[in-house]
Image 1 (spheres, protein in one colour):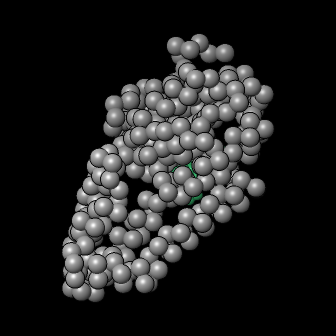
Image 2 (cartoon, helix red, strand yellow):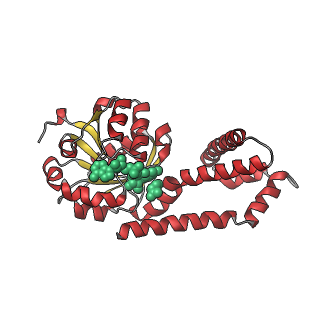
Image 3 (cartoon, helix red, strand yellow):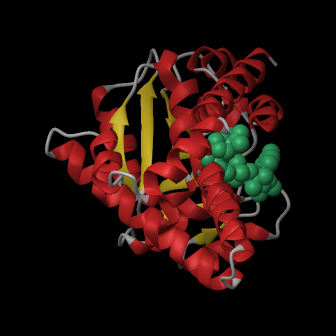
Length: 277
Ligand SMILES: NC(=O)C1=CN([C@@H]2O[C@H](COP(=O)(O)OP(=O)(O)OC[C@H]3O[C@@H](n4cnc5c(N)ncnc54)[C@H](O)[C@@H]3O)[C@@H](O)[C@H]2O)C=CC1
Ligand SMILES: O=C(O)[C@@H]1CCC=N1
């Protein structure tokens, strides 16, 4: 085994959307590039990402596994099987902490594919990692020590906030935190388009809607910290006979709550499908 002093703290396998967000977030938070190694089987995005944060690009996945204390599986869920089959021996020899960020891949599935005794942490981040605002869930496996949970938590806290979540709640957490940035972005786009229909330029409409969303997120966090809820913000903005309540009731008549319930149910169902395959 390579001596601990010569090993990278974190080795990322895959350099797609989520790993790029994590690595850029870590770099912005002050994590030294020299502690990071990145590989990617396409050989295209990893060298660019590594260069951007002064990390090391390793074209050879086996070498990355041998030289990393913590290995982050950053590929799509269905791409894990082949990788874990191919590099089982390297993982058995170097015994890294293995972190999976894949939706729908359970600890039991990972442990069944990894060499006996491998320490695993399942993590669900979101793309706001890129700006240090991921809200990230993690849970440890059968062979994961408290120290290894602390290592994974430190990684997650470099890109935002982290909480240990029971694995059975990962599907719903994935919907509310992992998927919702896309849903919110689609909502902002839809809101902006409605603004365009009423005369704003698309840019002005997007800017107004996005900054209102950002401000509202902060207001809700402050409300929660003070023992209040999101509903209190709704009441604060809805003036009697005012514009907001008129718009809110129209949105609710059009299915506002039903839309979000459907979205969460569909994401949870898809997570179950990924878990089964
Ligand atoms: N995109 C998102 O917002 C989030 C994604 N995730 C999870 O993150 C994982 C990655 O998602 P994305 O970044 O969106 O996918 P992506 O398709 O953008 O990136 C996947 C990367 O893995 C690489 N890859 C695949 N197989 C490989 C192998 N055998 N060896 C080396 N590299 C390999 C691909 O070349 C690609 O760079 C997924 O498992 C997903 O469930 C989790 C939370 C949020
Ligand atoms: O769409 C997906 O499956 C991944 C997981 C959460 C966000 N993106």
